[in-house]
Image 1: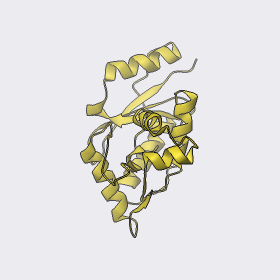
Image 2: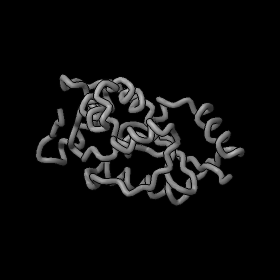
Image 3: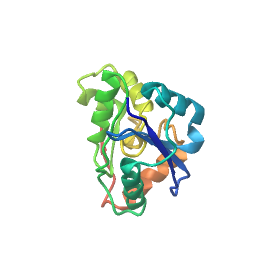
Image 4: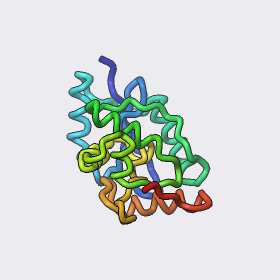
Length: 176
């Protein structure tokens, strides 16, 4: 199997770690929210070889897109993704990708969209396991009452991501 690549990316919200295969980005998270040894071990086991600590074309492109995003000049990412998860998780993460920049929705809304009305907790759990922060915009999912809820990078970062998007859209929309 082909190797995985990794690189650090600086952002206004803190240092990030990204992992990519030859097919696309597999992981993007805040460095202080990740256990690096576990991350490298997981992707090393998937490929049967150590994760290379160098960028490939997907990670270089991702870094450029993140820079544009954080400067308010990018609302839709084109970075290719190579997500690793269960069929259910992949379904939830795909639904997350349909949440437009500057829009928020609730876990309940997302569950209904997936025709899983009584499974909003399972949807929230899959949302919480999203391996690609920002590109798979789990930060756009909030509580039904409008409160900020769980984010692996921390609620302060979630708030700042939403504020960034709000500053670059006429108004923040909610879908619930």
